[in-house]
Amino acid sequence: MFSPRSVVRLIAAVCVWAATINVSQAQFYFVTDYAGYTGTWSFYKSQADANNNQNVVSSGNIPQLNMGIYITQGLYPPSGGPPNSSIITTNWYSSQNGVPGTGNTSNQSLGFFQLYNDPTSPGTQASGFWNEQLKTLTVNETGSNVKGAPGFESRFSPTAGLGFVETQGEFLNYAFTATAYGLTGVPANGSIEDISSVGAPGGYSGSFDALFKNTGGNPNLEGFYKIHLDINGSTTLDGSFTNFINNQPNNFGSSVVLPEPASCVTFAMIFAVSAGFGWRKSRQKRAACAVASV
Image (cartoon, rainbow, N blue to C red; front, side, top):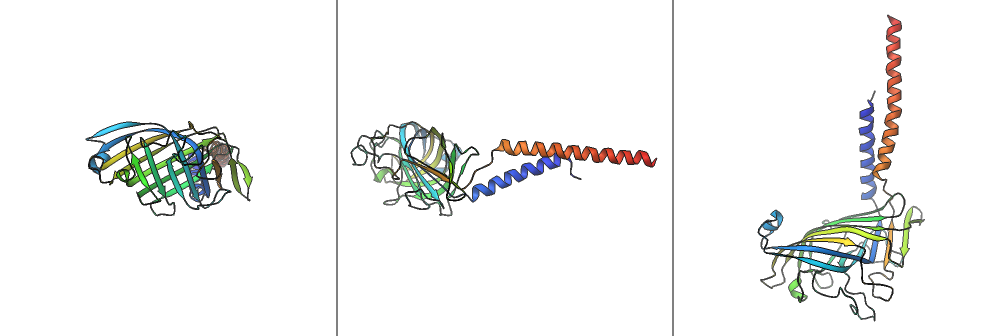
């Protein structure tokens, strides 16, 4: 017979395993033009120095800027493709008059970055899931070796006044996570929980950490940049802006609702208590039988 402790461990392991399986199989999309970020960067001349956080050549802060996120995998926004896409970038393109960047305070080179990627690439792993209350949606993505190319830029500009060519390079690796709050998920398309929102949700949190190799040809810039961004819900954009990544500034959807850890713990406790009573009664019964046999 299993002991109560063994049962608790078994239930906890099952909860973790089930959550992992669900997330890995999730179909989702996470689209917003209303997030923002601040951050820091550190510059190194060698990758070894960057990996070991030593011999920093220079460093700086990234001011509050607008962010654009368009990540889809298997499930696509109501407005359609592009499918299996990953766009994580500074939102410089939204405009007040139809000309990209007009009136947008983030249309600047200081702290600017662009990472266009493909989640179907072997170097990219992505997942997205709702919480149990369907009030938040979280997306996680990691990737590696994302190189710059016309139309699929991988760029980072640590300082102001830098141009397209000299900010080219490769994101050697990155890890991205973002959560949108204050949502109202509703069942749609069978088992899919889906939301489409024209206004900004209740807020965002998350981070973007990356190692970027500059290969733009400027010897003063070429090297390795460790980048850390903190994602927030601050933005200078409002309803007067157009030119969004999607035709609506926010779209969120996922086929998975992830059980919260508290639910698994509660279930494990109930199961363990029940198992404990059964184990105790069984022990008492065995003891009684032993006394009777004497």
